[in-house]
Length: 303
Image 1 (cartoon, rainbow, N blue to C red):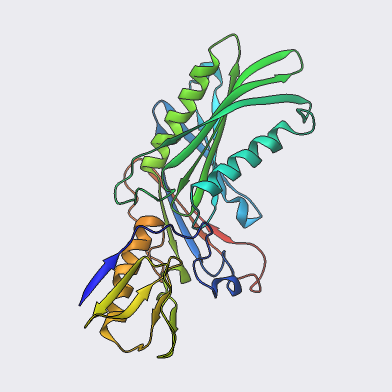
Image 2: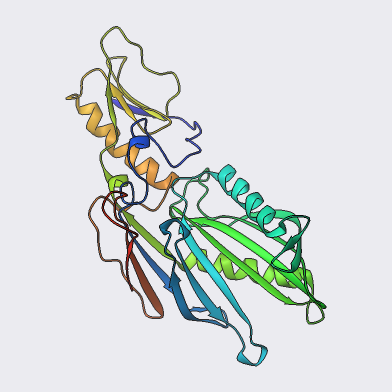
């Protein structure tokens, strides 16, 4: 018996099986999230955190810099699901469009960003094709009244979540390039240090599809198990198991391999049962329990 692995592309959406559309994402696929974040990033110190009423907006943490300069930046961490780099690109473009607003006017300010840069933060145990660790950043200018600022935006993907931050500085105090590099470095450090542990049906057994003897196996696959020159079980690009015999040992073998592959492609799911993450010195934990859509209002938050 042997396993054959291929480098096929994964699904671009968080939904990875045909029956996922019938299950809620927050409150189902993910029922609890533990966010363990650092209290210090370079010379920036966390001083406040906030959870938003709409669960899809996630939480934010405010980091303060040098008190004499009254510097601060807000970092937003909000659920995205199992996404690929194309989804990050689309989200970055949409965010910039919203900040530009109608003809560049929004909330009495004029904001314009330039080109978007793409970079990748190296993370241990993450597949090269994964979006985890991908970051997009852009810089530009903002006018508010008579004041002009250099401003930067950065969004990264980490463990089922987007990590986003904006940073603006008076234009006469530093350069646009410096604002961008400062923000990108801070978000990069945060992505390296933050730990986001999700539990829910994302940790359930992979969906199993049983086909009859006359049906052929799908051609597109991530892996398969062959015995006596016959395919016994197959893992699809959407992480479904396909077999003719659900009791064949090949199914269990491919289930384990499939979960390992999926964890490197979409890191973040720790299983179906909530667990207590390690909270190192100098870190703080935010715990969010997402209720199913029909189980009452909003997520519960414990910090």
